[in-house]
Length: 134
Image (cartoon, rainbow, N blue to C red; front, side, top):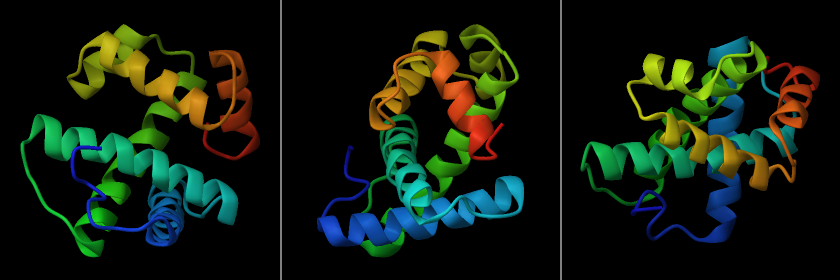
């Protein structure tokens, strides 16, 4: 994850993921999703945030506070992208909004599918709508 959760053990990953996911849910939609989905959103968000913060912006850091900030930023982006996918936007359309390549958006969506154990965008849209993300 390019250092975003460097020096943070698995228990902190779960705690940080839960808090970041719940807070991102409150910012994006006004409430969290429940502890399990909050943790998933936060941990997937940490990967996305780590890629953006460490990879694109070349900002390095470690520790719990840095990890939380990265996870929160990534979780907000994840929820925004899920909302756009649920609205039927294509990868190039989403990429244009985020100033990323369509392949990068596709990779993030595919990684989200893997983490949520889903098989296609239709299942992802259904999951997002069922959990109030769409």
